[in-house]
Image (cartoon, rainbow, N blue to C red):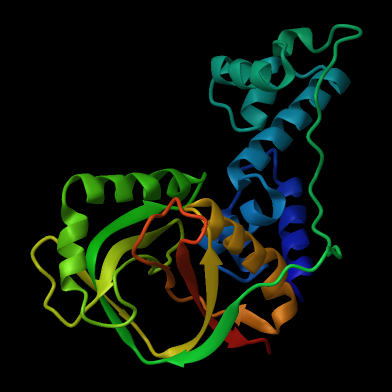
Length: 286
């Protein structure tokens, strides 16, 4: 089953369970990747977070139930995962512009968010600079935090981690540890679990981890390294999107499931010439 089939099978599962609890482990199983990677692929390919897609699809289905059935508003609210009529009413108004109780009136205008289907499209060519290399094992030392990956928690928390690291002077301490390759301070997603992963702000180092810091051992293997040129974070986010929507589907490689690295060069992160890199462990498709 290829990338498109796996993603569309996952959407089929979501659609069949909008009125029930979504089992994220099942999504990971269907898509043959971790929950973290599924949500990442989904958001880049669909231009909407998974949690927001589920929310909008449920509110679309709720509107249809209000129109086509005589179910009570509270029962529809519970059906689509809202524990109180107040929370459901607030969400319904935010999307449709009217209260659920008004949805059954003649002539009201409601909004519908359609089901997503993933397809391969042919676009104008745009080069991607990358290299595939065998890398020896690597050791990193730095700050570690467990970050949730359900409901887009990671997208909110990771920028906050960087802000805290820089504000509290931890960044400079991590940089002082750097004595390996790649040089400098990196952002690393690793140790993927059911609903969370470990995020590191760390340097490649053979120094013993200072108090309050942790080590991360990354095994030797095959890596693809993408070059990103342009101001942060827009440039690196654009390359991430193209990696999952263009490179992986046509490359003959799959994500190996290990740690992902983001390398940042010295210099002005707002410059149009700023250089950063994305490192992803890969394996040949079977």
